[in-house]
Length: 347
Image (cartoon, rainbow, N blue to C red; front, side, top):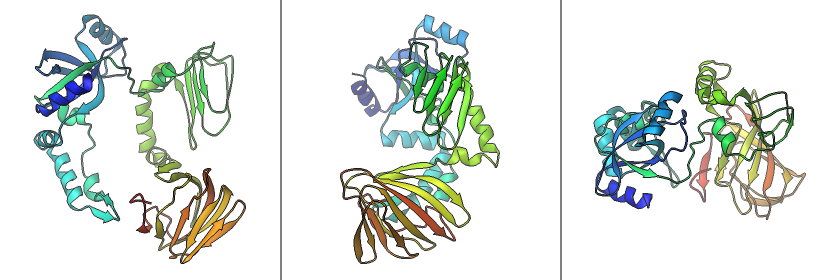
């Protein structure tokens, strides 16, 4: 199959991408013009085509010999490092310094943040694939979508009789051909056609589905403004191997989070230099370690962890544990964690 061909081609020194057989004149994907065949069954890449206008996409679909650029690659580490050094030396240099200056955190390796951030912000397509003479493509017919726009999400969703895809809390009246999704607030949508209304925990997006390919320009504008930059950098909910947490409220010297811990999982044994914590159990049963003491905390019970005290939270139960955590202190950053032991090599 396609993976076997890609593997053989990669072992022969090529940088392989999977090209998806196009089924429509899509304007939201990049294209690959397929070149001459290689002995492995893959083909050379003749050229890459940026996201085209509709007329050009229709021409490529009718002409044949083009594939959607899936952005899925296969290559050997040695070959891509060689190509990186040749075509993207600044990226190569920054990555090597970040690894050389990396620090250990139990069995987790943390790259040097300053060195890593010095790397140019560039995709592998622009940095290497469009420059190398070793690019190859494996034409593939498996079902694929990069879900790069709300329009793509709508197309893959289950539509009702009016052509709407709705998930979460939503009420639609006299609305058709639209995508409505909410994780928190109840959305009431009336009298609209062909729109996306997306409510996350900290923002709401409203736009026409046929313009959703341009949402990147909106994100850049949000990122450029000081008042909205955080919306593009962080998300209220972060996931971890043990579960995750949602930031509920932030203030001067305090922060409130909702922790959720999967059954049988536990956080690292840790301490904080700059904050104390209050934990309130709202669902499930918690096993809490504070210093040398281990106690069971049940629903509607709470514990206090003093600043600098070694502690750990675990879920010994069969259902997801939910805790409300109130942090207080002079510094509340996630990097104020001294891990002592951890089953994941992280916190």
